[in-house]
Image 1 (spheres, rainbow, N blue to C red):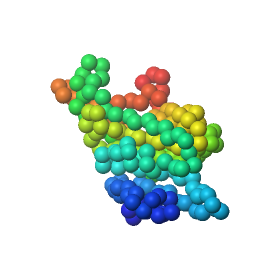
Image 2: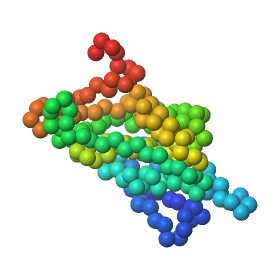
Image 3: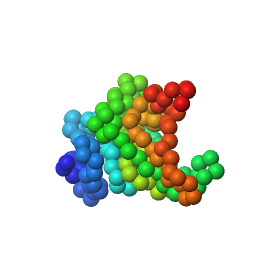
Image 4: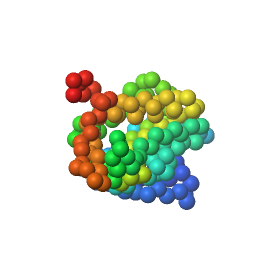
Length: 192
């Protein structure tokens, strides 16, 4: 996988973004592409998807969807909390079936675009161990106005939890670890 490349016409010459290729094979981070149209810069809408064992950078994800054409960037950041049902949580561990997860996230991005007038959508999810207070998922959406991006980011996290094959194990300080059933996923049954 090549490192992140950004057309110099999109940003000032001094702007540099960190480039960290995904660790999970098959993951993709697509660069933003800009084309000149008359006196204006027209940006091609992008869906940026990444599954990685690397620590997630909220600033990097936000920057990837920022556009001079948009007045709003909305973010959802899901972090590891330190407790669950009276047990002290020390970390979470995530696993995913990457090809299927990426395809489903692409479908979610498509659904977002059909429902709201958004410019860029980024969905980054961490795999492996995620310590307390660190981000497990970052979703960012840019749009001309705040209502579209706020609604889209809310829809995207709900759809991700319901449809994407990602599994979570909670690691406790004094108890055995436990794989958590996602009550929101479509394959969960009421009798479980």
